[in-house]
Image 1 (tube, helix red, strand yellow):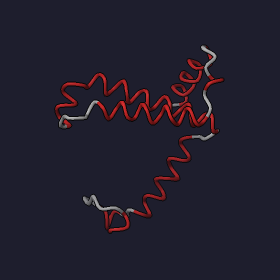
Image 2 (cartoon, rainbow, N blue to C red):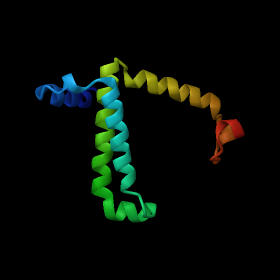
Image 3 (cartoon, rainbow, N blue to C red):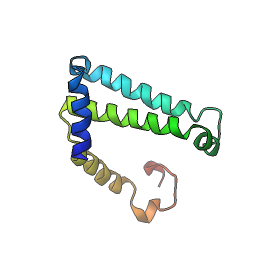
Length: 109
C-alpha cells in the first residue's frame, strides 16, 4: 500500500500540482469523482451497470481512491490507523450478535 501511495504522490509532485491541492478543493474533487462513480449506476440496475459500465466504474473508483490519498496526505492523516480506529468504533456500534445479517442502523438494533 505504501508503494502505491508513494506512486500517487510522485505523480502529483512530478507535475507540480501540489500547489493546487488544498483540503477544500481535494474534498470537492473527491465528492465529484464519487458522483461520477454514481452516474454509472443511474437509471440502471446494479447488474446492468456492471455489465455496461464496468471499465468506467473501475476508473471512477481509482479516481476516488487517488483523491482520498491526496486529501489524507495533505491533512497529514495516515489511513491505516484511522481506518482501524473507525472499524473499532463500528464494532461497538454493530456487534455481531445484534447486526449479523441485518441492514438496520446501529440506533435501531
